[in-house]
Image 1 (cartoon, rainbow, N blue to C red):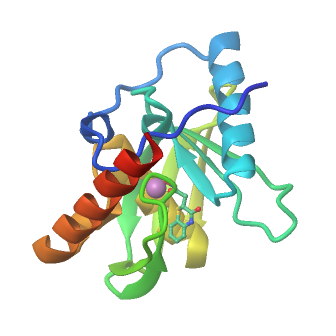
Image 2 (tube, rainbow, N blue to C red):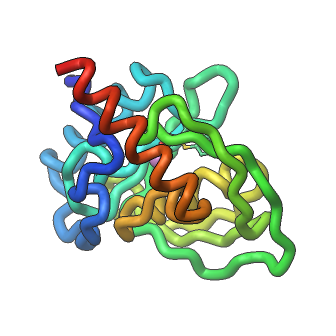
Length: 168
Ligand code: GNR
Ligand code: NI
């Protein structure tokens, strides 16, 4: 078990397109358990492999209050989305300290495999729907700040670059 390093915006590696997982082997299950540990330690409600610099289509999510309901999505696909949208105040472990409103479809149907390669589908609403869309965006190289105005994006970028310099 290991806590992995989370990439921070505006790291260009956050914009890489992740490739499908092909082998459901021990390496994948170790990565799932390290990602889960990293998510719980942060703490966060979700984590995409892209955020730990692994460019494969893998997400972990736990939106439970008790933090004991890990959900693993390998090669997730959005099969359908509701016409009605909802605004949610989003944050991201790769964009620490910033919370902004993002509008997305209210409900999504997602198909994925678990870490053993078994396929399943879920109908998601509420925070799970927001989180699934946020994480699948990461796999496609998209960070939530890209939904904001260019002014907000550039403010967030320069503040995070400045705080990086202060830590160094
Ligand atoms: O921990 C997280 N909380 C969150 C809150 C609102 C909308 C999305 C999220 S996901 C985020 C963890 C993260 O950055 N996942 O990529
Ligand atoms: Ni995120």
